[in-house]
Amino acid sequence: MTPQSQLAVQQPVVVVVDDDPAVCNSLKFSLELEGFVVRAYRSGTELLDSGNLGDCSCFVIDQRMPAMNGMDLIGTLRQRQVLAPAILILSHPNATLSARAAMADVPIVEKPLLGNALVDRIREACQRRRAET
Image 1 (cartoon, rainbow, N blue to C red):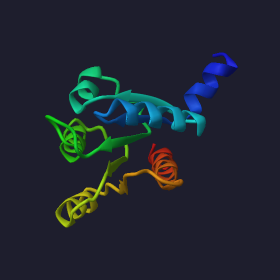
Image 2: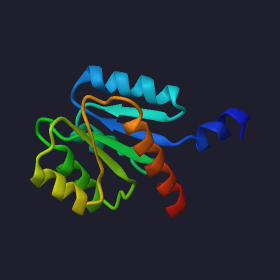
Image 3: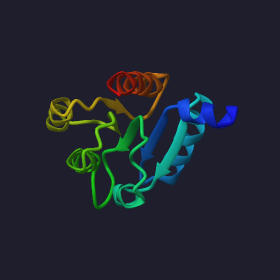
């Protein structure tokens, strides 16, 4: 294995799922600057159809997407035994959704994504994932 491929193996893989192309591209760019390997998908179906789930360190999933919302996608991932931590992103979470996310151990980061809140949550999730494996 070359030194470059060893480095790539050690970098956490973050999967971003958001139907807004601008959000996907922005998150991919900013998270790569933070040292993460990032794969972006425009829908839950696109992610599930990719079959590219095994090496994921953390998911960042938008709640409000057509066809399959974020919590439903997380539920499907868990049913498929994909246990990497997930972070839900959305504007104005209501009490019901917040309670559902808390019961599923899914932190919520509110949009607009200001400061380091999302990156901090991703780092925590990746550390937790590393400790579990």
